[in-house]
Every structure is written in structure tokens, then in C-alpha cells.
Image (cartoon, rainbow, N blue to C red; front, side, top):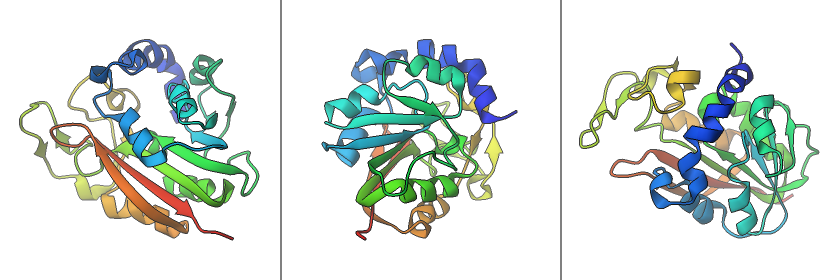
Length: 227
């Protein structure tokens, strides 16, 4: 089943239940510390920020607070219906963005890379549409500590099982409250993930991690070189 079709089926649950804590603004509703990572890795700025895989647009208010003008793309029509009123968005494939070369100031990919089997092409597309000097911010599940190989059922003892090096798709999950058991997830080991940025010609500037006591999210900020 295509990723857009899967997310169409869970869009209402995703907006009303899965994102309820994050939308509340309470610290306990953001266990991955996504708001902090957005502030620290993207930071304040002006101009257009294109969010790839924007989903229901839940991060758009945070982008505006930082001074950015958010726009988005997503494959799922059902998810985009929830985004109405939060940001201008189009239904589009992130591997073929309907955006001109060098036309946006920043690109954000927030918790989406495991939904995109063609993420190397997505990173190349992000680089293409960035203006010279523009920044790409990636925030995703931590490839070292999250995946079908990572058993987080015991909050005091993360268990890493065989599978990290496999680079596979799975619906295996340590709980039934998240997304992976519903739509599956693609996994890339850390060197493969970081290599995508370098292969696209981006230059890393800083990194961040979110979630405690063992990180759940890994973030990276990279810049497109000047023309």
C-alpha cells in the first residue's frame, strides 16, 4: 500500500490523538523535544520555509514564531485537509517538488524520513530548491536508538537487538501508541543517513538530539553553498 494511502487511513487519529500532546504546547506533550530542536537547529529567520511532508501542519505555528513563512507539501490528501488554515500546502511527491530551483530560504523535514524510501532523492530535491546559502534542517527518529531493532519497552533499559545494519522496512514496534506499527518505517544506519546530505552537496553546520534518557530524535542543520 502506498504511503499516502496509509496516512489517509490514519489521518484523523494522527491529528486528534497522536498530535494532541504536541498541539497542547505542554512540555510532556513533546517527549522528542521537537520544539527545542526546531528553535536550535532552524532558529529565527525571514523568508519562505518549505516543510517537506508537512502532514497536518502542526509545526507551522512554530515556524511563524521564529519569523518564517511556512509552506508545505505532502502526499496524503487526508492529512492536508487537517492542514487547512495552518499553512499553504500542496499535494506533491517530495522526490519531485513542484518548486523552482533556488527559490526558498529554508527547507524543513520534520519526522518524515522513515516514511520516505527515496529519502536520498528528497535531500537532493531540498538542495535544488534552496537558494544559495539556504539551510536544510532534518529532524527524524534517531537511527542508532530507534527502529525495529531497538526495544524501548522498559523505560530504564533500552535494548539494541540485531538489525541496525540491515537498512530495512518494518512495522515491528515496541508499543502500539505510535506510527510505526500502523504505517511501517524505513531505516538507514547513521553513516548512510548523513552521507545523503554530503552526496547532495550540503555542508553540515550543527547537530542536535532530543528525548531522554536515551535520545529518540536526531537533528541536523546543513547549508547549501553560495553560487
